[in-house]
Image 1 (cartoon, helix red, strand yellow):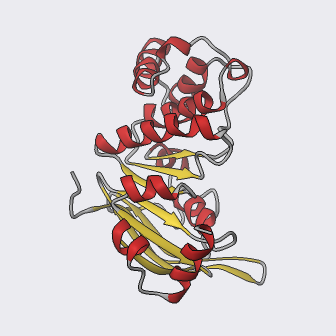
Image 2 (tube, rainbow, N blue to C red):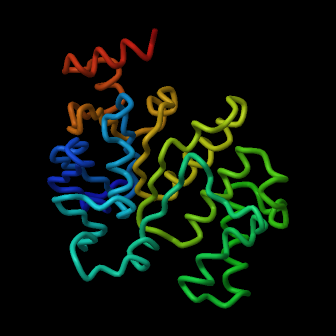
Length: 247
C-alpha cells in the first residue's frame, strides 16, 4: 500500500564530473509500496542519480532523505545508512568463492554482526522468497545469470532495507532469463517495498510501475503513470525518446 510519507526523497540533487554537469537539480520522492521506473537515454544521469542515493557517488549539492532522516552531509554512518538502502546492480557483484548462502549472509555477519545461525536463517528465508532455497550451497559459477541476479536481490532483501534500488537489473541477462528476475521484483513490490528502478524493460514498466520518470540532460523532463507517459507524453523530448526505442 502506498503511503503519503516518502521513504526516499531527493531534493535539489546536483552532480558533475569535472566540468560536465550530470545532474541538474533532481527532485524526486518514492513512497512505501511504490515502484518508480526511471527511463532516459544513455548519459542522461539515471545511474548517477541512483548511485547518489546510497552515496556510491557523492552529490555536489542537494539533500537525500530515507524515512525522513538525512543521509547526506557529514557525520552520517555510511554502513548503517547502506543497510537501509538495498542495491541490485546489473553485474550481480557476487563473490565467486562463496556459495549463494555465503553471499547472502556476508553483510549480515560482517556489518550487522549477526550470529551465524541467525544470519543463515534469514538468508535461507530470503533465498526462499526468490525461489532459490534449493541452490543455497551452489557457487555463482554453478548458477545461471538469472539465478545469480536473484541471489543478489536476496542479499539486499536479507538486510531488511527501507528502499531497494535497481540499476539495469536485467541488462546482463539472456532474454529467456529476464522474466524470472522481473517476477521476483514484482513480488518484492507486492510486499510493500519502496523501489526505484533504472531499466530499459519498457513492457515491465508499463505493467508494474506506479510511476514512470523520464530523465534527460540531468533533469526530470516528465513523470506520471505509465499510461500517461507512454500513451500521452506531454513533452517533445519524451515523445522523441519513446519514438526511437519503439522503432
